[in-house]
Image 1 (cartoon, rainbow, N blue to C red):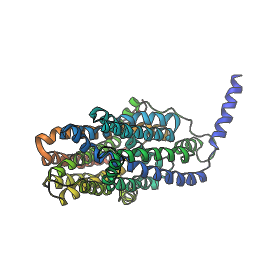
Image 2: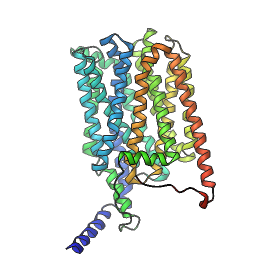
Image 3: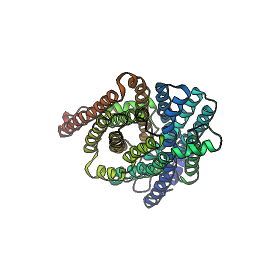
Image 4: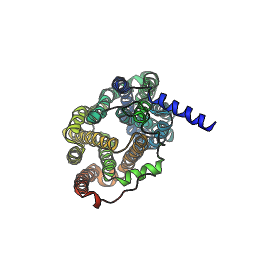
Length: 453
């Protein structure tokens, strides 16, 4: 009986390995990218529509700028909180289940925020923004879903195409935030809550796109192709996904992985640190919500519009030069914003554009590095830990920015943000030179590195 069961298991393994051929990979990959672009555009609209008004609405309810920044930071806290559970869902059921979960929680959060605004309930508003952050976590995870079936030569370009898709939704969300508020008022909702209504609808649309069209699941196809190898017979056995603790250890073992996580952290901290305070800074200068919305749109353009170029460059010259550029852009943008007075437009527009562009360089190059370092059965767990570190650090930056703003003002906080960009430049240089020395070292002199959990 045991021999018969083993034989049946072997037959099943061969049949499972032959479900998809290598020629199917390109066709499924093209469909996957189109579906993820559509979901990313819808999710990006929902994300930005909520972020623009969160700080301002919380300030209206409480009268406190500090509490306003805390409410806006709940978006990053929610994103970070969902990143690891979402990766566990993906490990168990596939990319579709994890992305659908993130978008549905985001839609529920938008509804809670609307109720918080109607009831003038600050904790309920924060809870809603927290839930909406799950939509951001899903948006970020789509870039890795697109890379599952990508070839090594086009991996960064594929990641960047998904990042680029956010341009449409995010720019539209920024541009119509003021009009969405007017629509909400016309239907009897409090001022600024119309943006949350639009956000909830768009998160639901993104979830529907993922559920209906992301079939077959790209992670399942990639796993089966990995197990099948090139000859169609079982080549690599299915290995269990590492736990969260094991994923942290896998990252810590590799200096390139540590740099990738650091680059995502610096990109996120600088981007959030500058962007979170800019609406309040401009509001002090008497600038209207429409102008603030256009500033946010300009910032979003920096984050997403040029990502195809960034991806192509990353594929061509590698991740390390792009991380040097990311650090430089973050430094330059934060400094330019720091020296701009509240009534000024050019400095805050260009400063936010440059830190957004630095975020794009950092996230695309770091994501490409993370995917290249690990086999398919380890990637989702490692990616979840990396996104958690990035989003949690952004949440800390957003939470602390309000208190720091009251002490050091807008300029002082952004001088500190500029230093993070300098730190990324130094870390990239040290990691690059260290890895080059290690690869030039004779094989018998290289230290053994333990692999596993």
